[in-house]
Figure 1 (cartoon, helix red, strand yellow):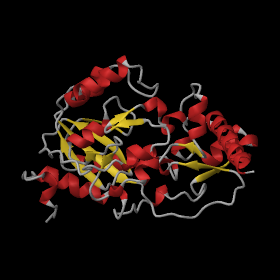
Figure 2: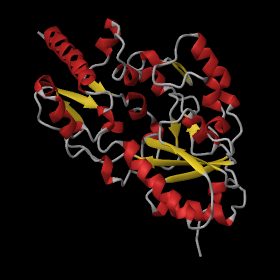
Figure 3: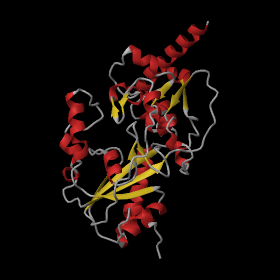
Figure 4: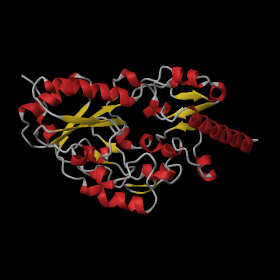
Amino acid sequence: MIEVDNTLMEGKTMNDLNKYIVYKSKDVGIDICRFTDCLPLKTVEGQLYARKEGNRMTEFEENDINKRIDPKLAFPSCKSIIVLGISYNVDYKDKPNYKYRGKLSMSSWGMDYHRVLREKIENLIGEIEKRAEFQYKYFVDTGPLVDRELAVKAGVGYYGKNCSVINEEYGSFIFLGHILTDLELEFNSPVESQCGDCNLCLRACPTGALEESGQLNPKKCISYLTQTKNEIPTDLKKKMGIKIYGCDTCQLVCPKNKGVKKSDHEEFIPMITKGYMDLEELKVISNSQFKRKYGHMAGSWRGKNILKRNAKIIMDNVFLTESSKK
């Protein structure tokens, strides 16, 4: 007998296939499994058009807004979407002894999450195929759809004021993926926001990229700045501090990330980097050496040169700070 917490379905009765998928998702190492429909994501349509008209779209996004909101443009026979998540909030506090170091976002601490979650999703698909014949298409941060909106719609969590999806059990340090499928499944319901009048994330954002609740200017976000190949304005460079890839500030101050369940995915433990990069090493490391040492992590996808550029910004910031103390 498969035991699954029926509260996951927000009052609905799960069919046997739903129960099986939830059970097997845990079996293959996926922390969160929810279900939603394939209707267009109309809730975010206006926001996407406003961003496009305001020149706030980044080069990493799908430019066709219809593709971003309509699952059937990605998979025409779609009937249900399985939304999946894994926590990367590993309990690790060691630091390296580099003289000058650049801080990595927790999203790039260990193995590239695209590979990790993709493998788990493929294993889950294999398990589902043992019970049902079905067609599918799956994505891990590589598809056109707004994956955070899918997650909110499926009840994975609610939007924090910093635009992160906050799950009650794991907080917001979660990676998301989804399977578009022609299976007919029961759907979860969205969950209510629990942010209340808290605005710690808005006040903590180093660049003011969080302009108001749920309103992010991505081109001022440090996570974006560390990845773009475009010129970074001088005033924003200074606010990057020692961050070489990504930014966790708004999540680290969030009360909903206190006392949550930690990740047990050893793939995300930063055994090689300890959460930092050696800035002096980056000056001299060859491409082949870079790929061998850092090619496993998500932050390597933009290549060595972007990280070298970020390292120079950090060194400038460090020297500026040291000079101001003299």
